[in-house]
Length: 368
Image 1 (cartoon, helix red, strand yellow):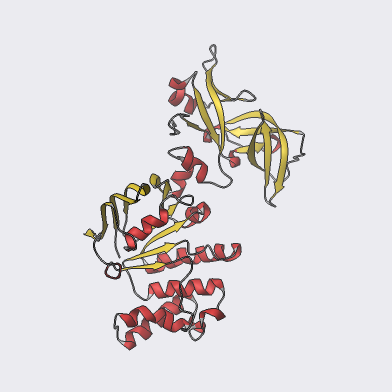
Image 2 (cartoon, one colour; image 1 turned 180 degrees about the vertical axis):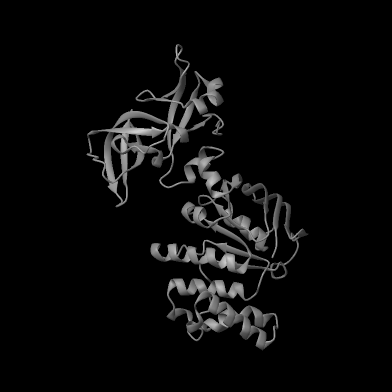
C-alpha cells in the first residue's frame, strides 16, 4: 500500500479558491477521513489526488512519487463515488471485472480476484444479477468490490454511504471499518457526517473554506478542538457556546466564567492556565453531555450549578435532550432519562467544568 502527501496544494477556479495551501501527510494503511460542511474543499482534495482535477499550486505524492502530471489510470488508486457508477447492462460479475479486462489481465486471474472480493463483501450470491435487481447497500458493496479487485495502493471513497438509509449506514460503516483492517490498505474517505468520521477514522482532517483547520485522532479533536469551528463541528449535538467574562473574586482569588445569567467557577486545575485572561471577554464552550440534571449528577466531576428555564425536550429513550434558556440564549443539555423537564419551568443543572473550553472571540482559537 502507500502513504500520501499534500505539500502546499492549492486549487483555484478563477477567483474561487477551493483548496488553500493544504499540507497533509497520510500514513501507509491509515484510514483518514476528510470532514467538513458542503463547499469546504474535501471532495476537491480527493479529486486532486485521483487526478480528476489539476493542481494549481503545490505537490501531491503517492509513496514519495510526485503524481501531479501522472494520468489517473497510472496513479494506482481506486475511487468509490456517491452514485456507485455501475454499468446497468452488466452483471455484478462483469461490473467488478470490467477494469481488469481493460488492463488485459488474464481471464483466470480476473475470475479469482472477482470471486475473492465477492466473498469478502458477502455478495457471492449476487454475481449474476444486474444493478437494477440490487438494493442500495448491495450496489454500494459492488462498487467497493470493483475497487478491491484492482488491489490499488490507495482507496478513495467520496461520500459512499449518502444514498443509504440510516440503519444501513450504521451497518455499512462497521463493514467498511472491518474491510479496512482486513485489506490493510490506505483509505481516504470524504464525508460531511461527523458521526461517520468519529466512528471510522484513524485520524480526521477537518476542513473549512478550503483550509485545513485541524488533523488528529477523533478523541483528540473531541477533547481538544483547536478552534470554535472544530469544537462546533465535532460532536453531536454540537457544543454550546456562551459569551462570558472571566472574572476573579478578589478575596479568594477564584476565577469564574460570568455569562450574566450564570456564574460558574473555573476549576483550580484550569484556573492557573487562564488567569492572565481575567477581566477579558471570552467564549465559553461546554458540550451537552457535560451538563447534567442536578438530581442525577455523576460522581467525581468538577461541578458548578446554575438554574435555567426549560424551552422544550426530546426523549431519546436512554437520555433526554433538554433545550433550555439562560439569559434569553438557548442551549442543549443531555440529561438522565429520569429527569423531569417541563416546558416553561426552571431546571437545576450542573456543569462538569473539568471539561470546559475557552476561546478567543477575535481569533476563535482555543486558549485552553
